[in-house]
Every structure is written in C-alpha cells, then in structure tokens.
Amino acid sequence: MTDLEALDELLRAEEGDAGCDAGVPIMDQYVEIELRGEDPGERFPGTAIHLRVCPGCRADHAGVLEAARRFGDLDPG
Amino acid sequence: MTVERSSADDHASRRWVEQLHADHPAHDDAVARLHDVLRRAAVHELRRRRAALEGPELDDVAQQCADDAMMSILKRIDDFQGLSRFTTWAYKFVIFEVSAKLARHAWRHHPPSTDDLTWDRLPDTLAPRPGEQAERREQLTELTRAIDEELTPRQRDVFVAIALNDASIDVLALQLQSNRNAIYKNLFDARRKLRASLAAAGYPLAGEEVRA
Image 1 (cartoon, helix red, strand yellow):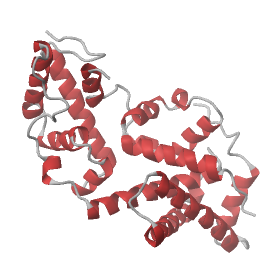
Image 2: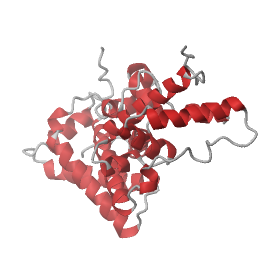
Image 3: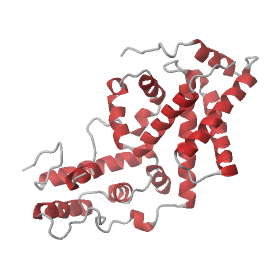
Image 4: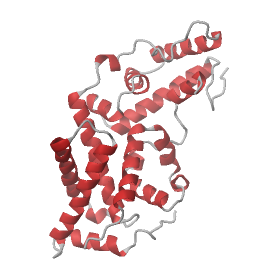
C-alpha cells in the first residue's frame, strides 16, 4: 500500500454509508442473501458500504454469517 | 420494495415461533433446544474473535450471552416477520450479545489510556520522513493543522483513538458513555472534514476534487 493509499484508508468516509444502527434490524436478511450466493449490496447498498468501513459492524456481520453457516437451520423438534 | 419471504416462510421458522410462545406445550423443549445452539454459537464466536477468555470464564460468558439473547428473543418473538429464517434471526441476537460483552470485558480490563485519546502528533507511520517529497510533507502538515483546528473536541478524540491509535469502537463508546452508532458518526464526520481540508489545500485524496 502506498503512502497515499494508506492516508486514503485512514480517512475513508464513503458517501451513502448507512451507519451502524441501520444494519441491526436487517443483518439476518443481509446474511441470508449472501448465503443464497446473491449480492446483499443490491438490496442494502448503504449497509454494504458501512460494512467495508466499520470494524465493529463488520465483526458482527462476520459472526452472524459464520453462525448461520456453521450451525445452519435447526428444527425445533 | 418487494419483500422476499421465500427462505423465511418455511415450516421450521413457523414452528419455532409457535413453540416459543409461553402457552405452547412444547415451549420448554423449544427454549432448551434454541438455548443450546445459541450457547454453542457464542462459544464459537468468542473463540473466532480470539477473546482473551478461556476455560470456565469463556464458558460463563457464553452462557450469559445465550441467556440474554434468549430473553431478547422471547420478548420480541412477535416481532419476527419471517424475512429470514428464524435461526438466522436468532443468531443475530447472540452475536450482538457477544460483541457487547467482549467490549465491556475489554473496557473493564484495558480501558483506553490517556495516550490513546490525547492528540499530540501524527503517528510515526504517517509522519513525513527525511528526503520525502515536499508535497507529501505539506499534505501531512495540512492534515495535522486540520486535526488541530477543524475538528470539534469530540471528533478529535474519536479520530485520534480509533483511526490513529486503533482503539476498539465499542470500548471507546463505553469509555465516552456513548454508543457505537454515535461514535461512528463522530468518526465519519471527522474523516469527511479532514478530506475536505486536504482537498481545499490542494492535496485531494481519491474521489475528492481540489477546491479553489
């Protein structure tokens, strides 16, 4: 990464970023779209931008995706 | 907007919602089954995030995450709209609990130091080096000035802690008695201001134009 790229990353603030709160209610839908192999950014573009920048929300998103993949669907019995 | 329900209008999701209602005869079994998978998901997530926890302490935190997630799910069971599978909706609650509890644990044991929050100068990795191009030095001088003069005290604290000193956004939110969304907004606004200042001074970054 060049110095200019490092500075650009340090000051990364993208237009259209939906912020943290917008992702909370739709995180499960976002993950399911990914699990279907589709692009969640088409339906939730602001959250897609946000997840590229916010480390906290990115970790949460990765956790929900990992849980859904690993533990999958489950029948109540 | 068209709402897709294909994956969510499934039999298992409907049964979860029915059985988790307190008056259903299978309620207790459904709660136990869901709690078990939430606890296992919490253990996995704590390990995935390389939490500074192990053994009984990790198990205890995972149990608390599953307990609190379960309470939230039962309280909001009628809010489930079937826009995802029920289990994916439920995993969201336990992952958010893991995130919150890890932040609280980190804040209790390693709160941000005064150095993390105090603006002094750019870190060595960004500071101009001898022999570097004059334009680069001037760009970083302008950045330093803008951090000093253009940001509000709150924006400066947040930018310095997170962008320059790599503090966790959730730990900082606890330290500043705020929340992740508000801290992120401070950071976002600080970055926009700094980018604009660089552009105005003739040192635009990608996507910015020089402003006369």
